[in-house]
Image 1 (cartoon, rainbow, N blue to C red):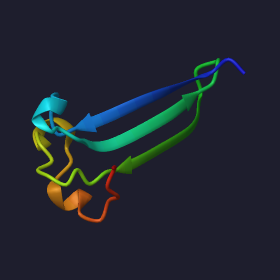
Image 2 (image 1 turned 90 degrees about the horizontal axis):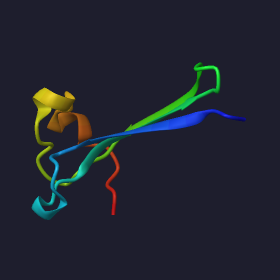
Image 3 (image 1 turned 60 degrees about the vertical axis):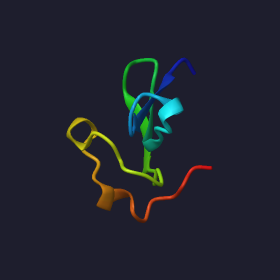
Image 4 (image 1 turned 90 degrees about the vertical axis):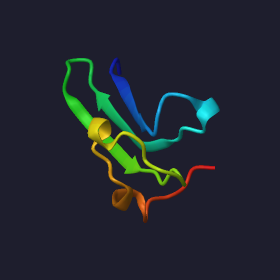
Length: 70
């Protein structure tokens, strides 16, 4: 098995020092011949403002019922 997994994070900003948090996690498994074999995504409630909605497209109402990360 020579595929790979691509992981993408959407965040409230770019600085953990400013308490920026993850708002979405996604993973896609791609086979060695380039076919998408599986994918997974979840929204995450950051417990704060979601940040630049114009960049990631995630609104505060989208994460209200999403799980929190510790």
